[in-house]
Image (tube, rainbow over all chains, first blue to last red; front, top):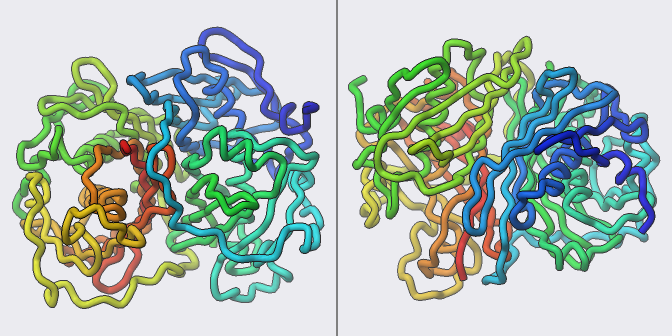
Length: 268
Length: 268
């Protein structure tokens, strides 16, 4: 496959043991700095590139300690503990010597076991039977083909209460790119903030921490290929400036690819 | 309030800048080593004791890198980034110089904002109208007064498929202890493993990572006091040796106290 803007944005250059340098990409600009999902993907990329890595990613928690500024960054990844079949990672993004993202990740050698999905994909129209959404005002949304089933973004910003914050939408990299753990990580952050969805009001906000559990292994990623991914997200509670978001991502065949959670800060 | 076995188990002695020592408590023994929830609580305790701490805990992710052995441990907590109203933490538990738990935490100064709960507490019998569960074979379960509404533990270990993995139960520290962030953290780990619940089979397993988002601030904790906490937990997917668990905890008044997620390893 040809290299896409996604690959460019998560590209890293080696800079010593467990260190890499990268650069924010103008094609992934958010309102301020880059889209959080692409930063999370770049961070996971450092783990995947590490010569001591054992196995494949099974979980990632990224904490957005400060706004990532447009420009260069440094990534540091180091195994905290390596077991027989699991490995625990400390990961950090720095800019100008200051920590901007902290993270922990787990990689593991996985084996076939009992499998079962309890969170079944909802029955919804097929992606190509839905209109493609117009890109939002922020650049990074042009990197995705989004087809909304429900509630994203609000039809009008009229401060009406939508009754709940659930969104459901089909998502695909544009241009097409076979799904991998990096792009799956970014997809888990594509949803608009739940407080905007619920209140139809553009209050200031930001993700403070995000976790992805990778249900998908190499086989499920390959089966997904360049197909659409169905994402569902909903807040469970809003209070004192913070709300959570519980998200699930399935492929077109209904295979659960990831479960993800965020905790967002908001004003007002 | 008098000091309980919970306080004893999370007690820490200062051991230099950002360092504390603690000791596993026989009253909180699990099958091997201590109950994971009490280790997570001890780890958060180090953050709360840190002289540079800003604000109250808003989130915690603990990674169980290795089995915690019965005996002494060292905790290290250090701010990775301190902003105007949020602070990001690296936290680590070591035994014999080796990392056994890694964690990141966020503390913050919270302010009153819009608030709303979407995940409403299910309508269930009151705790005192339900029988108290017999303690399980592991010691730490004696530290809780548990009253099961649904599905925990399976009535018989007969390898039957329960159809889903949801559990719903009332939980309270025994002896009574006013709820704080430490005990709330431990409560988020009280549920039996979802794979046992779903399959009624005691396969080997362990939590590899756990996240708690603290919806409760001081007011909600004070309102909960020594009352029961209703916990709901369900797996969304099981595959290739890992399953997630999505959990919610409310107080008796129906206030959402925490949302929590786990990712568990299992064999077979």
